[in-house]
Image 1 (cartoon, rainbow, N blue to C red):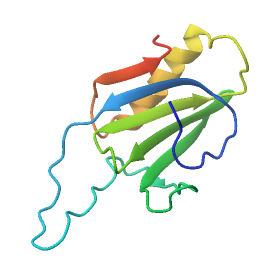
Image 2 (image 1 turned 135 degrees about the horizontal axis):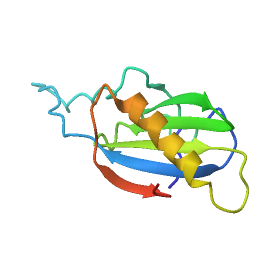
Image 3 (image 1 turned 90 degrees about the horizontal axis):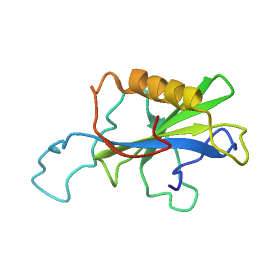
Length: 125
């Protein structure tokens, strides 16, 4: 799963989850293309993509024990919300307890949107 935008941490992604957001009807415009949707969470901030400045990517990072949880939303794919656990783990798998803690942080961060179905994850707790 490629990471979008520019993360503050350069540690590798050791766990990730992709969540399906409910469809949102965009505002109707009379002339021109529809306006791009707003991010689904208030905490998300614009996060530039160096290779394509036209892309609208938003992200939020929170430091956790021995790592960083990063939430990413791409306006070009508005029905997906992605979360990553970045940590200084090179080789091997992340312990189950750490994956559960990552999922708990993600649940807390997406609480304003409500529980969301999981589209994909690695690893699953």
